[in-house]
Amino acid sequence: MKIRLPHAPYIANKIAIDLLNSGFIKLISGLEPVVKASQELIEEDINKEMALEERVDELLDENEDDMEFMQVDRRNMFWLIKKKLAKEYDVVLSYEDRYSALSHKIMELLWKDNLVEYNVTENRVKNIIYGAMEKYIESFQDVEEIVAEKITHYKRKLIPGSPEYDLVFERLYEEELRKKGLLL
Image (cartoon, rainbow, N blue to C red; front, top):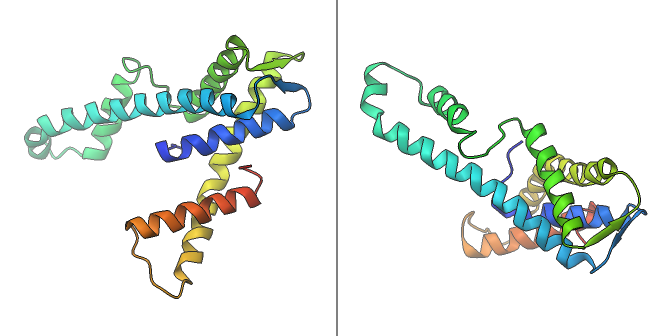
């Protein structure tokens, strides 16, 4: 499943929490540096895909007339072009492979920057990071639905997209993540 930029800090928090709770990984400088390093790599990965998709949209817009004349489905063409340009943008399209590679990058960065210490195999550490990402991704849609439902029961109606709605949504979202153990 595709993740968006607003999810990066939450995923990074989940990674740090799971590493801390693993019992065999020591966070040398505490949670915050681990969260920061993880978040930066996650955001970098998301930004690469966004740049790729932006380029694909540009190409589609440039050829809109030809596509309309040939009755080409824009969605299918988007996917084909994205697939063709993915390597150029260093984007892995299979989410499972992508998150596995990202987990490995995070593990390497945390080790290289001396933020973690462990005496187990690297694969075991990578699996904790991957598992944290997977757990967050599996649960964030459920959390969003719970929060949206709670907001509908407010006495004062909030308008989706308004600053007030966004503020309440974020507060309730973080509250639900804490309940599920995805955030400290």
